[in-house]
Length: 457
Image (cartoon, rainbow, N blue to C red; front, top):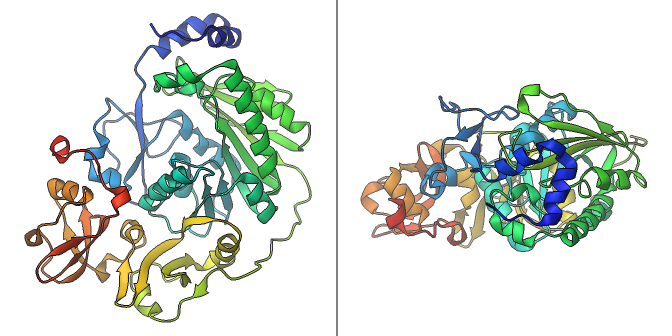
């Protein structure tokens, strides 16, 4: 039996009353495994798997496989994500006008589960800014975003207050999946139980208040803020939002639920909240609430103070041949050649000049004295025109060797010398350069599989 802190047990007995024993029994069980497919890369979904009912293209697996040994994971064909957190899709579908051009901020985005979900919901003219304040986690986020392969996502590394001061009244939708005490992860991460305390809950609540107040200015009047945590306690959820409403004016929006989902609706001070308990839903602990900002909607956009990106005229036709979409504009970010949707030229200049950008748009190639070096993200981009490249389709063993950053056997590659796109099941993985006497593997060192190949093959 798991030894839960007495304060946590008392808290849950207060919340759940006679259901608390069933709740604690559920925490002794095995956490379900779920993933969400990338609709831009996988057209046929698997048969025979149970679907996550509140999310499209998302399924439960009967057991947890060794995901690292599947090149499709590295190709961005799917994302392994906890099922309850995918409930974000319902909030966006029900209260965000996804058919329109939207500017969306995922504020606390690492490692990228919610950002990849949002990216799949938005149309190609919309903007997603995925932000992470911790720099090391921002690079993990950037890797997962690039593998997902959408060309309208930027990754930034900024404090919420800095974003608000730079981009006031700019975003239509802000998602705040707030750092929390992690009670909802007790079944999945035993160390989180040891780290939990009432003091930690109070500390998280204060930090969440600061985050909400710091980012509020960057949401336009009439915009939507979706707040979520993976905790059960009221201090980080309903009570937090009630306190936030004392100084910030918003309406709480109700969600339509299917009773079979087992989601629990709460109402506190006219604020609707949606709770996931593991004894009622097939997932971990989760809380979500949708807020609509009040105020005058007639606000002007921030001005671009300087052009951080310069238009790329040289070799632009050559690089445009790499792109399936003609409605792209080529820019230079230092030595990087990037492709930006025409609809986002203003937004690109604004955020590139205002924020600390880790990656963004479609990074196609790096310029050097010898020409172009294709960027890893380009190989994974869903808009890449593969007909512009020589391609080597890899089997499972050679795909894993490539992802492990092993030397590639020249005999299995396309006969042509020069840059080649490595694919697995027709999905891009990365690049090699074939020379007369050898093959250079250009898969990023920081992305490589570190597990021993003997355990993978």
